[in-house]
Image 1 (spheres, rainbow, N blue to C red):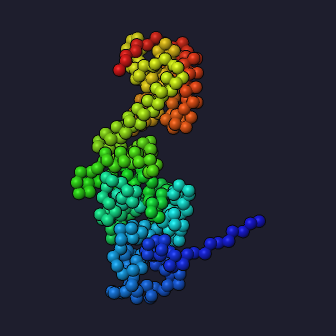
Image 2 (image 1 turned 135 degrees about the horizontal axis):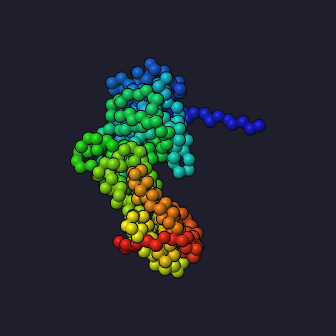
Image 3 (image 1 turned 90 degrees about the horizontal axis):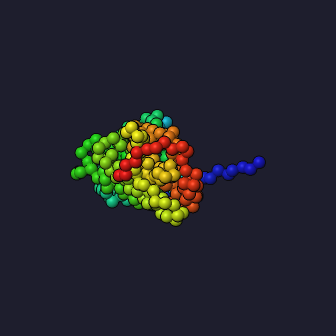
Length: 359
């Protein structure tokens, strides 16, 4: 049997260094600092100051933007029964979480979201950190917390998953974007037009953020923002660009595997005029269709059902449908090319004669 030796908590000096001189009352008491000493140190002209309820800055100068973020996070992460906050690892912003190798943190008590998180991520389309005047913090739904100072509490029933950004626990990019857009579109924007297009485009085009179009679309749909006209217009453009890139790569595979050039997005109908589908690619002589990342066409469930209906009708009429995922295409293009060649060799099965209209 092996025994795990508990790691001693960091000293006050070490904790202050990790949290940029911002600590909670619970953390101070856990290190032997009584309430009387805290009060004395926070008197006018004293070496410390109170930033938020039970959150202190261990210096007498004004807080930096990063220290304001720390104060907001630590305030929201405190254990309400004891007025304290557990000491977590540095990857979790010191708030009850463990970071993995990619900076993700689970089992968080609180994460920064919205415009403040986007500023920490370095979004060019939002005000820089010093200009951020309000800090949105996500907490579990059952937590009993009130807004305090510039901290706005937002509750969620979903598991809190965070990424460590400059040591602070932030919501994943897609969630932070959704929360920022919700705030901006419910008001009149941060001092001007809401930068919907700029924020959404930057979220998916900066590879270091690790936010895919699929993830962003799912988050915006979950939040109800996908139906907002300005958001929907940008999502349609991003989805179309993603699908075009995948279709271009499939076209390259068709050439590499010496397959005939297929029709692009033809409209298929029965002889009587009944609509069947518009596949991405189609070989009429072989009765083979290719569908690329169908979910990238669909923001709403109604659209998804419409696309699935067309795919089912093609299969029912004997057309062999090959479903190509952009993720699989990127990971193993040779396997996708071999699948296309084999599907073309086999062809469809007793394909019904159809009317084909090229777009």
